[in-house]
Structure formats: structure tokens, C-alpha cells
Image (cartoon, rainbow over all chains, first blue to last red; front, side, top):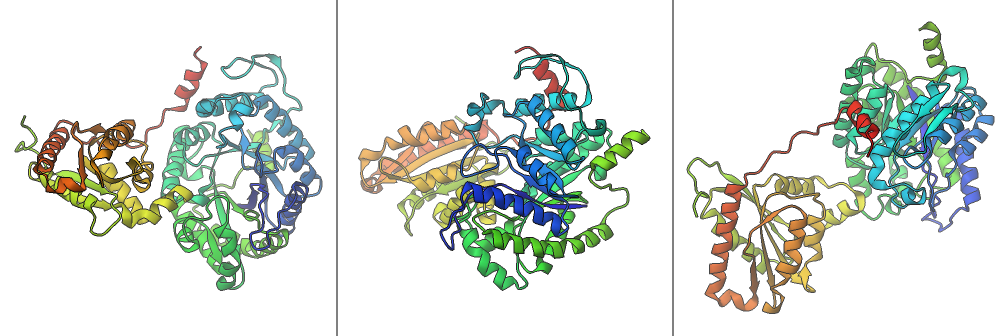
Length: 358
Length: 202
């Protein structure tokens, strides 16, 4: 099972000090956080993609390429890559390039994006969100698998005799996750291709995501990629850890109360009750994270949101130290509970082996 | 007109949403009068949703994007109802903000709805026609033709009882003519079909 972190890349004032980092400080902090993720033994770092303030990561492969040069093991990913407003040709090129530079330590997560104005800014229509996601990904999928592509679609200028370069490393395209918080069409899309499905369930009650993941698993089996239990599921998580749960709650509460996504709404206690957010001791975080498996089945990737809502870099790095201590326990416990026949998430090496043996 | 009291009919689920803020509230009083008038004509299981009790939960839902368990139960009751009585005080020439915030939580409400309101003066009565009726039409509700407005002075006027009886009769009949349809479970269009639709020329 893979454990990692994902970052939205928000520039948010620390509500306890009023200090807002500069874009430069935030970008450098994201890099420091990614390097720390590798240092404490995590498997994945994923960056968001945004095209509006207060978010800095507009150019994911630039950031991931830099991190790739400074890491050895870490898988570099996205959360999410906008399959609706990006040109699929550019995604194919950028991520294939990144894959070569990172010696295969790359996968990505497709998402539609939920910021209305981004669509018109990039010449698209938000009402076409699902059709854009379907058509653009169909093209991306083809570009990575066929050396020469003739293609015509509804949303992009046609291609004749087009070769996307560089070709994927070892002719193994990066593994793709499809992220969705509400659309069964995307679960269906992930299942059709035998790709992964990532449910970022951190802001909502689990019942909704249980339906989406059940649908994805069922359709994954329907399309002949394996059993429902073998489908590739990823989940979000959000934790704040201190050795004592009282300290964790006291320290995190002002960040929770003022958080851009959910602040000034339900109390910390109500929110932790209804969503996966866990603020407490290492053992509480371990117990809560293990409980995800009971709701969603054995799964392959767990990403935590650790650096948001104005938490200072120093605190985030301390949190990653705690996470680094917890993850080996989670690995052991999840492995012991895992049903036979459930595989790990595909990596470049595993897909390369599968290709050679096929 | 008949039919509302057909012997072969099961009990209907009637949900009464009331946005009165005081206790006791004249809006609730109007809602209760309407409820009695409806249940006199049709056997109904009645659920009353007092929005005052849900005010904080409604605001939290707007902020956080999901309902508390208590609010979720109220939303489910309205969603599953065969008919709804929706009553609000008129504030600043329209429904109260709390009333609107509650109904903002629905994508649609395709079912019979009786609209009613209270106010300090009869001059606000057309708020029902200018504000509530379009709101529920937008939500695909089937709004009873008679809406009921009660100004302070109306509580001494026998005409109010007549309007209540007429509106209640209309709601009962609409519930009979438009039985609630159970929404089918989430269905997914197979992927090949989604892809093929895109490959056809627009």
C-alpha cells in the first residue's frame, strides 16, 4: 500500500500570527515538504493544479521535475491534473518528459476542476465538463499508446500523423488515477480503462463515497480488469497529530475554525465526527485510518492533506515526522488485514514487468 | 371533484415546513390550520419541520457542503413527501432568508406544494405570488393554485377559513393526482455510449 501527501498549494494567512507567506515562500515550502515526505518514508507526493489566487501550483510538471531531481524514491503525482481545460497533447508531452527525468517515478490523477472561471479562461465551457473529461482523456490515452495518432474530436483541433514526444519511458505510460467527488460518470470512466479511482472524501460524509467506490469496483470487474476487490482505490485523509490528543485539538482548532474550505461552519468536533478529519494522538490517527478499509474495502493509496489553512512550514514538517512514525504501523496493520488477491497500486516497475511477461 | 379520499389509497406523507421564528408563532399556527384542513380530507402521516430549530444546521450546510444528521433527516422527509405545506413569514417583501436557505438545499422538489405566508399587513400578500410561487416552480413543484396569506387582521376574518379549506382541498387533490415517484437508484450510462455520443457530429 502506498502512503503519501497531497497539497492544494494555498497561500493562506496563519490565523494565529496573521502572517501570510509570499508565493515564493509557499512554492519553496511545498518543495521542502515533498523532500521531507521522502525523508520520513512516504511513497507519494502529489500537487494540485490551480489557475487562480490564492493557489501557487499552476505548473505541476515544473515543480515535480525539480523535486524529481532532488529525490530518489518518491512517486511524483498530481491531485489533480485538469483534464478538462488542459490540452491533452500537452499533458501527454509534459508527463512523458517528467517520467523520463524521474526514471518512471510518476503517475497522475485526472480531475475536472471546480473553479467556474477557469473554463472560460482556457476557452472551455463548464457545462461540457464531463464530455471534455471523457474526450480529452480518450485522446491522452491514445497518445501514450500509439506512436502515430490520427484523431478528430469535438473539443480540439484534429491531429494527422501526430507523434507525441518523448514516448513514455520503456513504452509504459504513467498510471492514471481519476479523482471525483460526485460524478458516477468518472467512476465509470476509471473502471472502463482499468485505471485507479481516487475519492477525496475528506470534506464530506463517507456514505456518498461508498456508493461511488462500489460503483467503480463493480464496473472495473464488468470490464474484465480483475475482480471488484482488485480495483485500484485511493483515498484522501486529513490529520493533525500530537503525542497527546488534547494538544493536537488545542493547536489545530484556530486553523480549523478559519480554514478556507470549511471554516466558520460546523465545529471541529462535528466535522471530525462526520468526515475523515482526525485531530489527535498517533493511535487515534492509526485507528481512524484503518477504519477507512471497513467502509471502502482494501485500497492501494492513502494520501493525507497536511499543509493547508495557513499551517506554518515548521508545524507541517513536525506533522510529517509524526506521519513517518505512524505509516510503518499502518503498513503492517493494513497488510495483515488485506484480503488475498488484492494487489498493490501499479508502479512504473510493476507495469514494466507486466509488459515484459505479457 | 373527488378522488382525494379514494378508499383504495394508502396514507400519504405530508411534510409541513414552517419558518416562523417566535414561539408560539402565527406562521406555525397557519401551518397547523392548513395541516388540519388537509388531514380532514386525506389520511396523512404528518411531519413538521420547524426551520427555527435547524437554523444553525442550515447555515453550516451552506458553509460546509453537507448536512448534519438532524438536517439530513429533515431534508429526507421533504424529499420523500407526497406533498408539502410551505409556510413563511414575509420579511422585506419576500420569504424569510431562513426559508429560502432551506429550500436552496434542494436541487428539485417535483411534488405538490401548498404555499402560505403570514405578515403584519395585508399589503404584503402578493409576495406569495411574486416570490414563493416562482421559487417552487423553479424547483419543479406543482404549486396549488390557491395560496394562503394571513395578515394580523385576518385572524378575525372568516374568509381565512374559507381560503384554508380551498387551498387544502387543492393540495389533497394534487397529491391524489400526482403520487410521489420513487427516484430510481443512480444509473450510469455505459462508457462506450458516452464516448460514442461524443464521436457523433454535433
